Image 1 (spheres, one colour):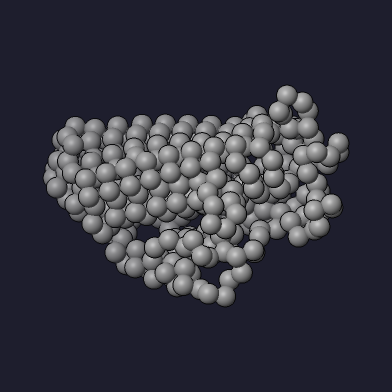
Image 2 (cartoon, rainbow, N blue to C red):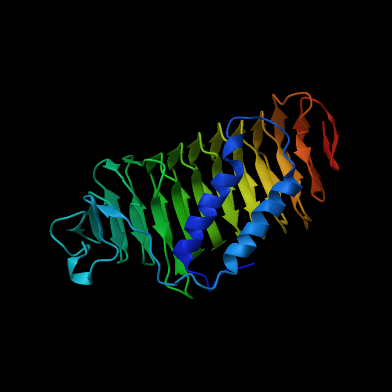
Length: 332
């Protein structure tokens, strides 16, 4: 189910709110989920969302710049990278200094120069070839809005967007992107967001070396193809990574600490060399050539199975404190 005809900003906002409403009560509880029931609830509502015909394709997310919404102002009033003052200032050699929330409409290298408090959505990226580095500065929200939202024009895809080095605290969604190729999300820290990262229809995404903590969901990945999810830490979440219909790609060398991995209808995904601490893998609906190998599971309650669901392929080398055969995967 793709939603190419749906207003993209509206879809991302609705899906993000939907995921929170479905799972928020499970943020701290550790239990085995009825994943079939959860999946049916999500996908029945997502199908309803995608069939909406009255959502305008030109809806946008409002973002605050110096406490003023700029997304609906005439172009002449918008703060752009060519201005000498305001949130975006061109510094030469392809670099832009960033000092406040803004819409980014031009390719280039953007560097955050100070901490930011956001009252609504903060950065909307409307260009290919954007390299945004927060340089360790923080973006702090208040349970609503997006810290970053990547928004291609209707019917198009973006390529080569990078967001790195950010410390994001408290928004509804940390980073969201739709219809994008070669996005890189690296070395970010996301705390207590409703959703840490949400991607839809991403190809060759690289999500590497990030830390997400205290989020009901660290990541929700819809139709992610050949994506690399590596060297991340997910902790204190009810859902660490949620895959919806992934194709290819790897999930490796991650640490799931009191969060877990959930896969629906995967094809060709490899899950290997991850550490699950008080956490487990749950498969729902049919999997095709999804390989599970060389993962370790520890600190699970006695009644909780480390691998739940069916149809994954046993690649060998999985280790559990309670050895056994779990849904066709041998764990020694």
